[in-house]
Image 1 (cartoon, rainbow, N blue to C red):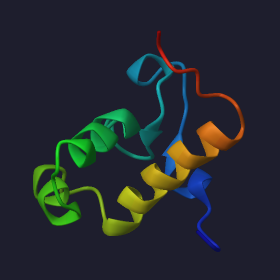
Image 2: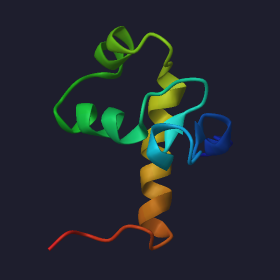
Image 3: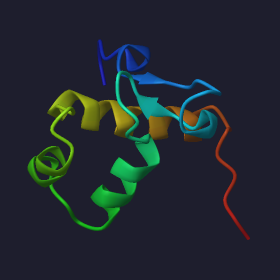
Image 4: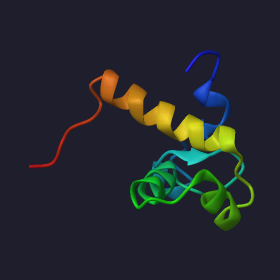
Length: 78
């Protein structure tokens, strides 16, 4: 995804949500949005449930996940 700066939308802070990646200015965890996408929810449905998010936040979550896998930070469970 060209020109998307994930760090503008996602932060990791040990004092917020136990240090799990969240969308800046919210306590919405990136993993929660990814799970909703996996369950088949659309971007529109997710935003209805989390009005602080935008379609760009959803794209940032997907980009973040792709970066985690590409960087080797992803470890599949056994």
